[in-house]
Length: 368
Image 1 (cartoon, one colour):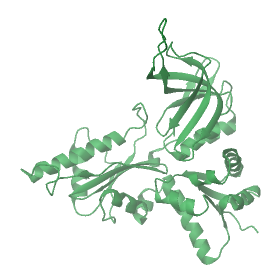
Image 2 (cartoon, rainbow, N blue to C red; image 1 turned 120 degrees about the horizontal axis):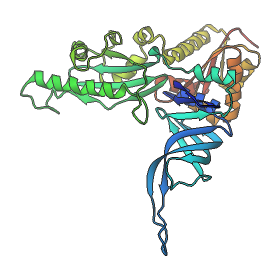
Image 3 (cartoon, one colour; image 1 turned 90 degrees about the horizontal axis):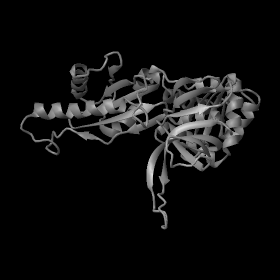
Image 4 (spheres, helix red, strand yellow; image 1 turned 60 degrees about the vertical axis):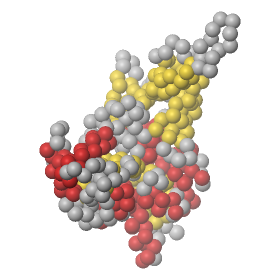
C-alpha cells in the first residue's frame, strides 16, 4: 500500500493507493461510518432544457468527497464499494447532498479523512500494509518464441497476454532475425515499463518493483542485456535472472510461483509467506501434529485463546461468514501479534486456501 500524509489546519487525513487484495481489505477495516472519503469517480449528468424533458445524460469523471454511510467488499474481494452523501465536488452540475457510491479497485487512489485524530490502532493497521521494495515484482517468462509479463503485488497477480517474437513467422517479417529479436525485446521492455507504474491515474508509486527474468535457453540473458542498455535503462540492483524454471509464457509464470526458486528470490513477498503457511500446515497434517486450524469455526476458537501465529484467508470466506464477523476476528488475531494475509483467486495460493475452508492458521501451540 502506498500511504502519504495529508495535513490541514485542523484535520489529518491519509492518501492511500491499495496495491493488492490485502490492501483493499485493510482499507475496508479503516473506513467507518461518518468518515470522509475523497476520490475520482464517474456520474451521469443530465441536461435539463426549458420546456423539454432532460436528455439521457453523459457519464463524466468527477472528484467527489463523500460522507460515508456504508462500506463493503464485493464477493470477489477485488473491489470496495463506499456509499454516502456528496459533501463536495469539482463539478457544479453535481448536486451536494445527493447519494453516490464509489467503487475502489486495486491501483485506485483515495483520501481517507477521519475529521479527528487517528487512533494508534487505526494507524497501526494502515501502516502495516505500507509498501516496500520487496513487496512488488514484475515477472518475465521468456524463450525465443514467446514471453509473458506479469506483475505480482502482494498476493495479487496480473498476467499480460503473451508477446510473440515472430520467430516462426507469425508476427514479424523475417528479413533479419536480429531485427525481429530487437523488436521482440523492445515490446517486452515497453510492457515492463507500463507495469512499473501503479494507479488508475498513472500515479507513480515511488516504490520500484524487482524484475525477475526466467525461462529456457539464452533469450532471458538477451533480455537482461537489452534492459541494461536500453534507454532509459533499468537499475541492475532490481533486475535479476532466475535459473531453474524452463517454461515460458503464461505457464512459465504459474510454474515459477510454485517453484523453490520463487521462495528463494521473493523471500520478502506476501505470497511466499502464504505459501509457507500452507506448506507448514501440510507438513503438520502428514505428521499428525495439531498446531493448525482450518475453517472459520476452528480459527475463531484458536483466536479466542490467542493461539494463532499466522493466518491466511481467501475470498471464499465471505460465503461462510459476514464481513463484520471477519473484521472482528482479524482485529482479535492481530491484537495478539499474529500476521494476517488476504489472497485472491488470481494465484494458485488463493485457490489452495479456498479449498482448505477459506481461512487457515498456524498455531503457536496445540489446543483441544
